Length: 331
Ligand code: TRP
Image 1 (cartoon, protein in one colour):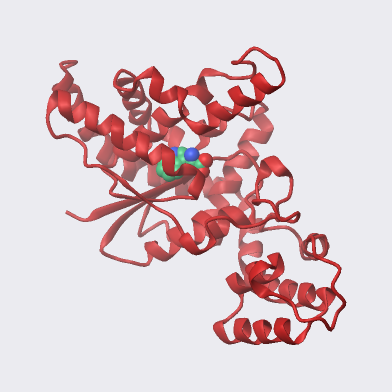
Image 2 (cartoon, rainbow, N blue to C red; image 1 turned 90 degrees about the horizontal axis):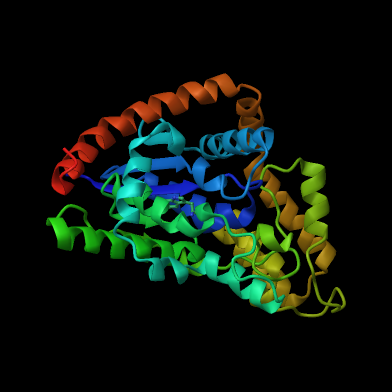
């Protein structure tokens, strides 16, 4: 049987360079390997933990679907679906919640960081926590194990969730016999933490992101906002500590990267470095941006593609869930 690679993105904001470089790009690289069975999805119900405005929710969900396709995902060769179109995942979610200890969820980092911040501000520890946030890792476990996934390409912040999926799989297997293989995460080591405009990790919560499908003028403006030091233009600069260089090498060819490195060592003005960054970035993003805009203007097309994907996914999830229900004695 082919190994399965699976990953999802939750629609909680505009997709930014950190998402692209940390998770989407490596996943699409793996997608080129034909020996794998590939599943990519819009984790829309994970987004519901945060987004409670219907219009925004719909727009962001389509946005994730359009992003995958615009960046080159081939929906014919992969299983490409919207999580909420596969109801078996949510049935499995309940089953798994009976095999996930509450203590394990208490230790999940997203929940824990809200609790920590509440404590700091002298609020009730669970202030602002809905059960969706609390149970988030269990639903993610169902996403992963529903398709017997072996490899999960994710950003570094999701590693703990894949480990939780392994724990839950083990608990289930210990009770009912070997049912789920244990998934492994795969992170992009070299760029595990992509810096944002201010030098901290690029993250929606820091408001320092560069959305990938921003219009060229805005993209240029954002790049100009990247924080730099006050070295004069002709002073030698260290490429390895430069946000601009870290981004540059993700979009430039190896020879361009080498050239830029030399320019840094010889002295390059920040303005010029930023202009070069914009050039290579826009060169790469131009076509996907256009495709993205086209797809967003034709959500009916997106619906059809996602519907076909959901049928493929359910071709696997319906029989597998039946087996699981037999094991636990529901049927
Ligand atoms: N939690 C992931 C994120 O925030 C999204 C996600 C949901 C996911 N289900 C998944 C990723 C299953 C990989 C596998 O980025």
